[in-house]
Length: 365
Image (cartoon, rainbow, N blue to C red; front, side):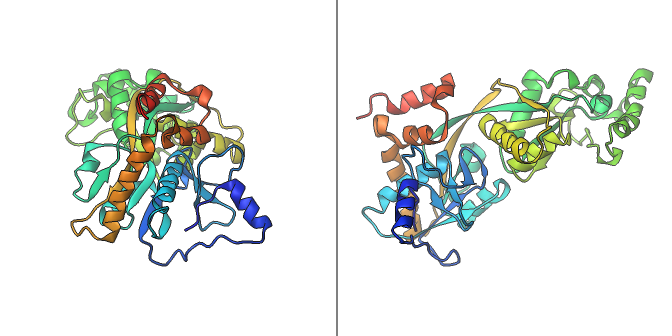
């Protein structure tokens, strides 16, 4: 395995040397799961050379490396481990929806992406997690256009999330505790299942207007999501929210710009960077805004696979967690602090995240 420290890469190139990377199909002692679509935490990028203190990871894409806050934490931990032991490493690209399946089954040994520490994930018998490495802010981006206002009485807000993330839980929280603003449907609030209630004439007229309003805005009425589901009751406000899932953050950003959804819910850093990329590269006329309010905070951790066999790979995964703990607790030289400096604007840190880092470095020697 070769970890890329950009300044060193260019020096090697000038010297006519190549950095050996193992055949991606060959077996490795440790397989690291990473993402290509979750900046600034885990993503594909051209090598970044200016002022970097942490290392990137190789990819199979020519001219690209895996990088980001969590990837750089993992590569630094591996580099420290390889100072005292010999083992091979392979980086495996995953999507959000299949990453925990891959981890639980042992397809990967370490998951280096923005993964929320969640009790449901920890119940898997083959999964362990590090102490928190980041405190994320979950929020909302929304369209500035009101092109779907006419059919809100039918379905309530249409919210987009990335499949395989904890964003669906955040949607429920936002709907129940804060609401989704003026687009939330009064009719749906009162009658989440119109087949089980007697609607007033005004309510019935509101529902009947749905299809024609959708057509006026160029939306096929067949595509309108249902807002009813068995087992839901009128006091479950979130049942009126239609949620659509997308494979990755780029696809979700594109859907928001194309008005397939009215809201996008997720980690604000990831949502913002995905929208910036789509606007810059694909849809310069996209008219959206990001609500700066943080509706909930989630702790990211680095998950590993540990089997009952306790073989060589399992011992390496445990050694990874131990080395990670050492690297985190180095005070102001903590890998969390160094990776944050390489991947974020340090002048825009939130108070809660600032306190999180203070808890990491305070009193450490």
